[in-house]
Length: 208
Image 1 (tube, rainbow, N blue to C red):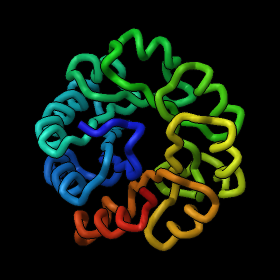
Image 2: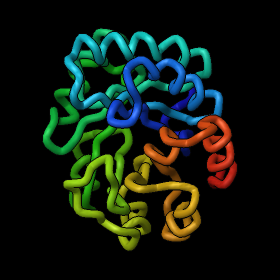
Image 3: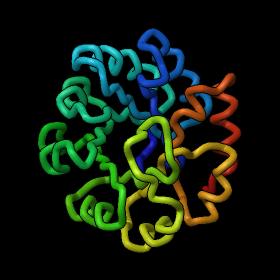
Image 4: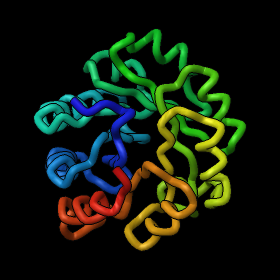
């Protein structure tokens, strides 16, 4: 199983783009393409359905050595024994999430500013998401943070920093030039004609 510290490419199966019936196939395509970590994000589904999908994904992610992260639903992560859980600024504190899932499950947190990034580190998060870098349909209510703070957040935070929000193949070079070492790609993969091939192509451009 890949360690979160070694991960460079973070994928998300977002139910805003993928129908529940397509989750298994999308999970396999993303894993075959080479994502290092994969999150299940199902904002509008009831917990029982989130858990059902997580249990559907786990055999695939584990076959490929890819940690599965459950977004928001700490109790679902605890029930299914996922490798990770991810919380937002308005969700459970890192300590509370860790108490619920246990020491073998890593905890990530969304951050949208340098101050939030530093606070997440102080809370004891295992990694952070930093963004959104660009305006994105996934989270239209969030104001983009841009690229100018990427280098600074890497100076202030020693945790793995995954830059998120509108990242795609066309923007990757400028994101990396701004100082990013790890990226999250959502819609660009989920809407691709050949998901696995797009994942392989983008991953080959990331630094080791």
